[in-house]
Image (cartoon, rainbow, N blue to C red; front, side, top):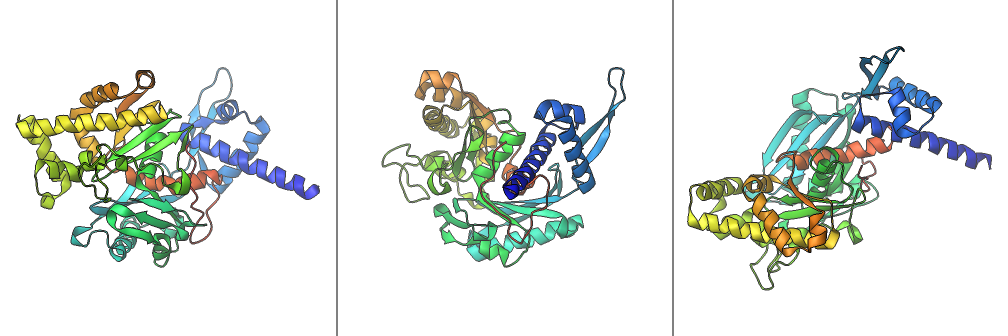
Length: 412
């Protein structure tokens, strides 16, 4: 019985530390009094936990503010340079690696184009490891300060017992049960956290962007392909085997255009950047971003073919969003990804109109459709939130081992 009580006390202290640190991270700077008010912890618990966090260097003082008739209140915040985070976006045309402090301020970055080798596994592994070495070297930081490396990838991620056990099934890029975690672990001893890129983007937008404050939302990613992070009660919905969210491979038209996944009529085959370029009849040798930019420029100049294509795209996208509304009744749908942010400003009103026409009226009336706020590199930021989430869950204690536990992180 004594041992059980001891574990309970220890677990309670760990939970208090995690709850306080998480609240301070998202809402700080805050005073001890505000932390007690917001978390419901006793003054004594606040004092003990804050003292521990200050002693460990996880938290630091952030000035003081006056109080009514009393001594000034000392403000506290999470120390941004207590640890470092790496985010990696294995995208459609490049691998982007970025180094952040705990405030998610970017310290250095490296872009490695995939070029003609595409998503050949050995090439992707080499580019990730090369980019990791580059950002640490350029920022001149001690690798021991890195809390973890988060990696967003296209496809379904089968989580192992730790980051080195992650296996990726990326049908559109030709990956079948690729042991990406184990391959990367051969080149680095930093903790690894691997997840689907749309889910990492969703976590970033829910924490810091257009999804902030919502409990039920869908973060939709439009790039070369199309994906989504479905958030229910503040947590990403993953389904069986963490494969939920492949919105781009829902059927828009039976027997329609051939999709990269091999099926016909997928939403991605109509609204993804690769599909837009193909439907307009433009060769993407100069890059899909250039092709989408040229399409928008032509439409802005009144080119009838370009205008018609974008009008059709708005309707297709609106119909796809209506499916999300009817299935999940979210508070918010956020359109993100580099292609989504390029076409969104021109098409958003038409997309809303089409979604309203195809969706059930009641759930659509309770849903807003918005653009993401974190920019085209949000997957990289989202990937960095994977080790950040584990750090906050651990109450600021360091993550030990070459491949930290990479089970799916909790949404705020």
